[in-house]
Image 1 (cartoon, rainbow, N blue to C red):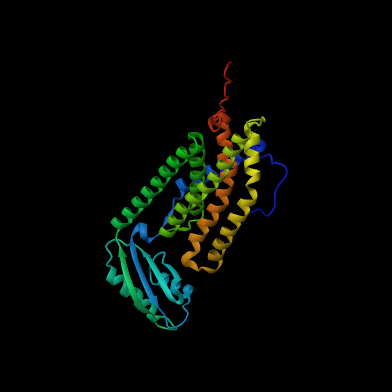
Image 2 (tube, rainbow, N blue to C red):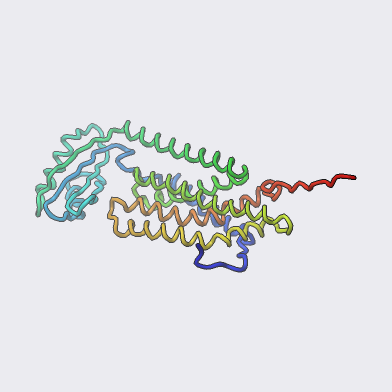
Length: 312
């Protein structure tokens, strides 16, 4: 299905160096923020107390947050979940603190305020050891996904495509993490899930472009096309599909971002950044890398064996 078809190939590869310089600068900025500011890890990774409380009417999150801050709780994270009456409270780990006493102090603080009184539904304590295990497991999951993508692309295409795709995908991941480090957005388990989803989503776009590259190489046996021309044709011919697919996905993600509440906010933010940079990297990072690594038609298209006529 195509909404439109571009009759003339767009010369993307003519400006490949400019696009990759922009990508390199963006990548280095992301690394700089990660190194200097670091990620603002959530309670799941750092340890702390997680509480669910319910109100008889819609809760004022700003008032709840202010009450906790005024009572001496540092950096309380307050958000709705499920309904406007249900509130999720995360408190960072305090050394030598008792989870039971912390929850009692929180309930006493909230009950002392004006308006409806809260009802405690659930209390969980995440120790520092559990947080370290979650961080280690998340890093392991990210590494296994990367290894799996490299093996899949190397088997399906050729090592140049695998290397180019994984560099482009890591480019997306580092930029997402750079945004979260620069603005000190909370990095939680849902955000980690979004990063892993972006890896798969980005490699899908790379596979679509690379499939078309291989197809063009194999169909261009009787006419000479340079590698940049093949890449330009492959990218241009998939633009309609890219707009339909990513436009539909982005509409869904934006709906979560705008109407999903704070519980889905940073998850949707990570996906939004990942989708935008995933399109960019698949077209303007991975494809030039394939060209610079020296891909040739002979590596993808088997030569046609000419039948020798029998001598009478």
